[in-house]
Image 1: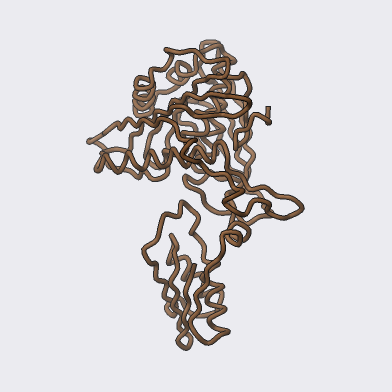
Image 2: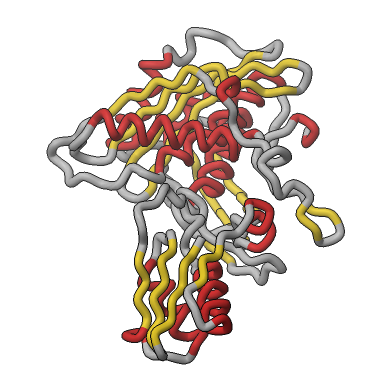
Length: 349
């Protein structure tokens, strides 16, 4: 939504954006006027999670206002937003690795094509590590998603870590601890597995357990999950997230951030996808775009690892990266099928 008003060659726009100065630059360029002639006002607005970076709606409102010679309010419908706004970048991630018989990772090559380089390097102790991002021309407009490419890179890396553990015949948590020398990473994995009771139950026959460990934007994260699979439908039953972002200032709000990121992560892991056919978006309505519902919510438990000796880091994005890889690993534990694309659907296997 945007409201635009012209006063000679001066433009004022009210719009919900995460980047008011970036939108000001876009407007100045679009109309060929100095940036000092553009004012962007951001009213109280909800979260954007990367969805409010650019100013298309503001530019359109300003064009209409200029043509009409009076202020214009423009509000896109949900269908217009789904169709014309930017999409989360699709990506192909190729990993090649090696491990010794004792479980020590000996080599690691990680190549991300298109989706981004956030959290691309492995936090594990890998002496011969290559991690590269390769930009790719996309036929679709692309933009930010909560956590940026860290969600895709953690999904690929932690799924592959489970595959490596399986190849060398090690239990997944033990394999990670074997290769984790970062004390902060080990601390969150220890906190998550202890709270979860990792290893007390065995997977199989439609019930599985999965875990992950990771790092992004100054925060360390580990998650353990329990899932069930019934007639091909995956249900997350329980998830424990341990998170460390330095000194905890507001523990209640931090727990809320982690729980909210977990709920959002379940959507990306299991349901959310844009469907295309012959160049058209087929599910441009919330009635057809599947988001998490109350019935999809698992038991969520949060463990805060408070480091008063370290500076505080942000917590709005990192917790989302833990959901998809831990769920994918649990699906493998339950069914023996390795799913390598999100959303995680048993029809992939």
